[in-house]
Image 1 (tube, rainbow, N blue to C red):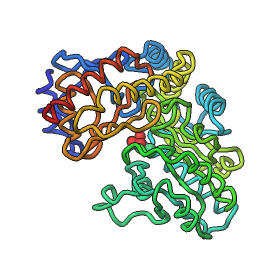
Image 2: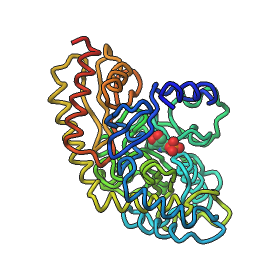
Image 3: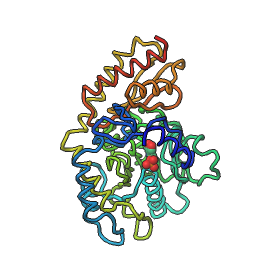
Image 4: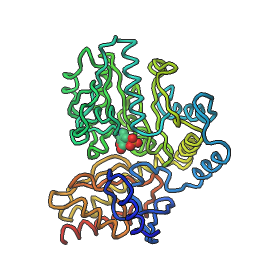
Length: 401
Ligand SMILES: Cc1ncc(COP(=O)(O)O)c(C=O)c1O
């Protein structure tokens, strides 16, 4: 099938929940992608912060293939050897003590919400169930995680929302302090707001939130679904703030594209969950754990966390140098390999995205006036230089220079 045939089939048979760009990728290697017409692209989206180890990393492919040939799924009715190994590895690289495995970021956050409520029920009484989240946050598309997401556009059309969530402006400790009440059991934040536009909080924000949560005896849940697994130049975004959350949620890059999510927690909180409280048919099965273990090994062995920090700095420098004289460019923000290039209102991010795609670079338009760059963590200096040259050309063309 060529691109056009794929597009016609999708348009005829899929529910119209997405508005995909007119391209169908069929093969990948590292930071390269090929579409169904044989055209090559440099991928600076990485499946939206998913493909940390690059497309089809040989060690990840081998781990998945080997496990697929041995045993893919039994059930959490029985012990799963790789699940304990993966949980152990995650506790070694994070501040958590125990893990629950699921299949997506939304599910990881559902688990965190249920765990926080159960913990509060035991420790604070049944009236204490409210979770404070941030405006412009994004926590997923299930009903509870849409309710946790502080953006009207995701909630409208689907009311009534589950109750028990309250929103405060991000990066405003005073507002958070005022919102905390007897009913509050937890605060749930992204360490950098990703879908909300790549919003990096002030350096003292997360440390002060941590202090406040500890003083008030409430939990700090950090949604590291997009920022976790090395993307920001540390294994987890919270490390930049030198704090430890009580609960961490992960998904996206955890399996290099193989679906797996995780909710991690400190010992005393994790133990609020008892048999029967939470479960998932597929969560942490043999195959997804094999993919995640191989992913963590590759990230560690190839120094990809440090590479994310180095390449992120390089991209910021190159983009500032190349684009600062280009009308329409405003600034670049973010951390590590989670970056937003912000344009002035005259430049359409969609037009830049489309022009990049036409010239062989995959970037992601976020809203009207910025594009996200989130390449695989294996990205090289040569890839970054090539991407910035294509991006600069696209912005010049769209801005009419
Ligand atoms: C911070 C954050 N949390 C949760 C999610 C939801 O993840 P999933 O789409 O795997 O359910 C996303 C997805 O973009 C995200 O960025």
